[in-house]
Every structure is written in C-alpha cells, then in structure tokens.
Length: 427
Ligand code: ATP
Ligand code: MG
Image (cartoon, rainbow, N blue to C red; front, side, top):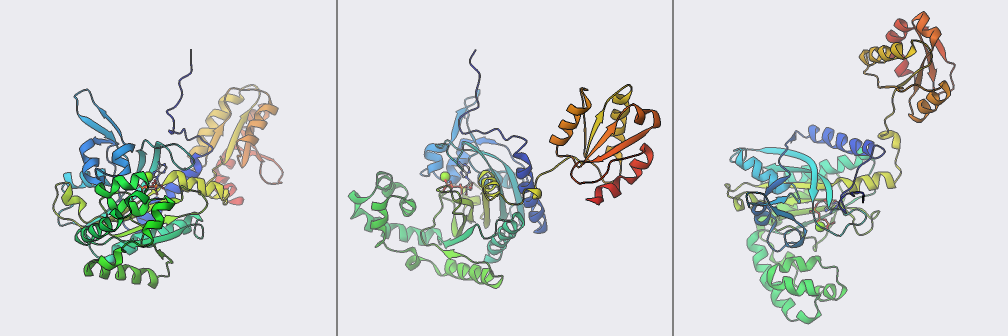
C-alpha cells in the first residue's frame, strides 16, 4: 500500500532541530517577561469572517492563502493564517480591552496556502506580541527595542536590519490613495497584472509590487509623506526620538506598507539578507482601528509577529554557537551482568531526584558493554555511570567522564548521589 505522506509545506520538526526551537522560544519568553508581557493562548480555528473582516478582503492572505472549510454544521471555519485577529477576538470577547492596558504574547502554528520554498511553508510558526490601550509612540518604541534585545540574546544582532515607516491615519491614507490611483491610472498598461487589478481594489499594495515595470512607474508617483496627517507625523517623530535615544539603528522605507489591511501609523520590519527572498523575519505595526472594526470599542493597539522557521534557519545557517541550544544528558547509565539492570534502574531514579535536577539516560534493552558504551558516546552525555556485577555487589557506581580527559573512578552509590551537584559543576 502506498505510504501516506505529510501535507506539502507542512514540516516535521525532528529532535535534532527542536533544541534550537526551544532556545528561541525560551529566550523570547524570558525577554517578554522582562517587559511585563503575559502569555495568552487562543484557538487555531476561528470563524472565517474574523479573518476576512480583520485582514481585509483584498489581501494576499484572504484572496488566496487561507485554509477554509465548512464544518459538519455548515459553518465556514478557517485555520488561523496569523495571530492578531484571534488575539483581538479573544481579548475583546473576554472583556479585557475596554479602558484597560494589556500586553500579550502568543506562540504557535499558522497556516497559509503558499508555494512552499525555503522560509515559506504552509504550516509555519509565529511568536507574536499584541499590546492594547496605549496610543503613544512609547509602546511602539518599546516593542521595537524589545525585539532588538531579543536579537542580541539570540546572537543575531548585526544580521538583521530594521525598516520603519508610518502609513498615517485612515483619512490621510484615503486622500493619498485617491492621488495615487489618479496617477497610476495614467500608466495602467505599464503595470503588472496584479497591480492593475489592485488599482481598483487595494492600490496601496501596488507600492509593494516586485515588478520592475511597476516600480519604474512608481518612481515618479506621489509620495505618502506629502499627505501624512499631523498626528501621525508627531507620532512617527516621537517614535524615532525614542529609538535614537537608545541607539537603535533603522532605515525609513517609505514603500513599506505591509500586507495586511489593519495597520495605521507605525509599520516596521526586521529584515535579513541571509535568507534570500524570504528576508522578513519579524513584522509589525500599529492597528488602532482593528478592535472597533471587529465590533469592540475603539482601542489603540500595536504588535508584531516573527517567523520561527526563518529565525531557526538564520541561527543554524550562521552556525552560531550551538552550545547555546544543544542539550546533552548529564549521565548515561549502562548495566552489564547479573542484577545490574535492576540496580541501574533504581540508581537512575535516585540520580534524577538528586539536587540540581540532573538529566539521565538509562540504557534499556541490554547488550554488550561495548555496544552500550557506543550509545553512551552517541548520546553526548557528560558522564557514563557504569554498573557491573562488582558495582551491584558493593552498592557502588563507576563514574566515567566522556567529554573530558579524566580517569574513571568507583565510589559508593550513596556518596556519589551526594556529590552530584559538585560533579555537575566540575566541567
Ligand atoms: P512575506 O512578505 O515574507 O510573505 P508576510 O508579510 O506575509 O511575509 P506576516 O504576515 O507579516 O508575513 O507574518 C510575520 C512573519 O511570519 C513574517 O515576517 C515571516 O517571518 C513569517 N511568515 C509569514 N508567512 C510565512 C510562511 N508562509 N512560512 C514561514 N514563515 C512565514
Ligand atoms: Mg506573505
């Protein structure tokens, strides 16, 4: 019978990769905690209308990337393509937004029907942060500074660059949109097909076009800066001052608009040149209108999301110190000879109960001493604990360093258990 395969673009993440994932997730969690951000979890499946209404009818995601299906009840549901919509839905539904200040983070799988390639998958993972109830540029700046701190902790500073823009208020964007459409309509036939279509549906997205012909037309197009409202301009200036004060470098990119409809004022992206076309590792911005758009009361909000797979590719590709995330057992317990398996089994349990929460891999299934030692070596453990008939008889253990050039020694099991904290600090 034909073997059943995973769905294209949906990856298995294997033990050799999970340590770097965990390093990334743990570091992010530590940094978020430093900034007083709380974790939330919300469903992977939501009503389709939630994403259509928040992300926008005429966006890549809603037009062609969503996994949408009818459940047995005939309700249209969608696997979440991003986290902001669900986070806002949950916080609003639980009455956590009106007149309150909230800082949330989340982590988990997202689903988009895209063409799978390096750094672009159909199931991928994001870690995101969403903050509510704060309208000033200070929180925008704090989120950006926090991501910079995260890159630093991960060893990625110097490999990512910050691009920043303000897309102004909805009214300013409206006025700019009209001017842009008027200009682009004159060159309609020079635009790529997608852009021609967007001229009537979502003209700002044309700024995003990678088509050379379209980019040429755009060179002379009206610029948003000339249409920006005073409030957004002040906000942007304030944000830049905060970033300048703490020495965060950035490039203002007037063409940065981001793919989703709900943004206003601040938008930003962290970009790397080390991943080819899939260079955006983190993107975010302010979305003051979204809560109201989803039926809540007006609530200022700002957030970002980063792509875990792309960051993992960076971390492994840059072959950064893998000692940062590689984890090895402290002890590998081998057992050879009469009565040794039972003694080793209970010894392993006692070691795990010792101070310092040591990690212990017990050799299961017997075999020769040689084959057990091979496994011990392969496990990357720091020490092997050798149990043979003489150890069983004397209630002792033989401690054999595997990573350091030291002599093995045999000592009473009880003494060994008490020495564990010292042994673990030795190397
Ligand atoms: P891109 O321009 O690369 O398509 P995007 O603007 O669609 O990205 P966002 O919706 O802003 O991406 O999502 C935030 C982050 O999630 C991205 O910066 C990226 O790191 C990651 N991401 C988005 N789509 C995918 C995907 N299909 N596979 C892997 N990571 C992704
Ligand atoms: Mg995309």
